[in-house]
Length: 78
Length: 335
Image 1 (cartoon, rainbow over the protein chains, first blue to last red):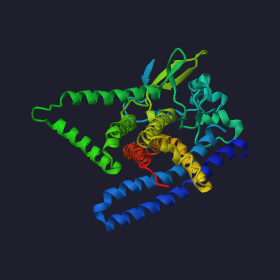
Image 2 (image 1 turned 90 degrees about the vertical axis):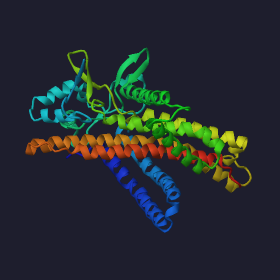
Image 3 (image 1 turned 90 degrees about the horizontal axis):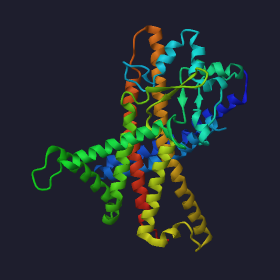
């Protein structure tokens, strides 16, 4: 297999999205576990907790989305 | 000329036929004729000028890193990912893309349902089942929204827009699963006897222009609500000259405000576009397995079911985030 600039482009895109989703995944996992814990302790507040949980998900996910943007740029634009 | 490339199977993209044809070596040249842009091996991107619209971006997901077999590698790949939507018609300088057609259809569906239900609503007689269903649905959303916002005046203004955003994104996401969307193709004759295949319909949110448009609507609305409730004091959240620390906090606030445009639009686009590719992969896998054991295995069905769930979730997330940002903008900060 020849190593061309094309190869490194795809490799870089894969690394960007692969490493970039690790952080948000951990963050969303922690947020969800804490939110479910809170819902278990305090079931009547679960509606309120759920909406705030989704907000926290979205904020953590935004960083994963930046990684996605970078890899899309690497594949299609660079 | 219209044709349905895979008439009997309900599906998403019709690459299965392309894959099955590949068993014969003659088809590779046929593919080159069908996708003339592959021959040059050009991969271009970005929101280019008008002439760049005519060539769609095609890339393969695996194989063919060798530059010598680049063109053949494209034709070899059974998966054909289209990043920029096809332009199927043109009025003057205005290109009509397949996602635009589908988004207009989604709007028409919503307007049609609204007219149909609105005609049947009575305020004097006994309400029917339809009226009770829609009134309780709308009432539930309104109550939840006013609980979160905690301000009746803001709720009255924000409720129609946010609910419309939710319903529109939901319909636009689900419209992809109607058979025919993504599979009806237009065969365009180019000069030299070559053909180019364009898709007549495509899910609107798989187009970045669409999601960015929605994000801009939501962004402008959030800023409008901020100025409406707080007046010029709203600018004080971003340009605060009381102390150096507050100044930097304000600048960071401003940047995170602008980053919402990116995160809102790319969240929706990424989820829907990735869903499209995953269904495409499942269809290809189905073709490979069919070739191997000669039994059709419905791989795409559970994945499409999952993608329908993603469609609701992303519609809800978009609407909820707009709601939270409106709440943030309308609640005064005390510094």
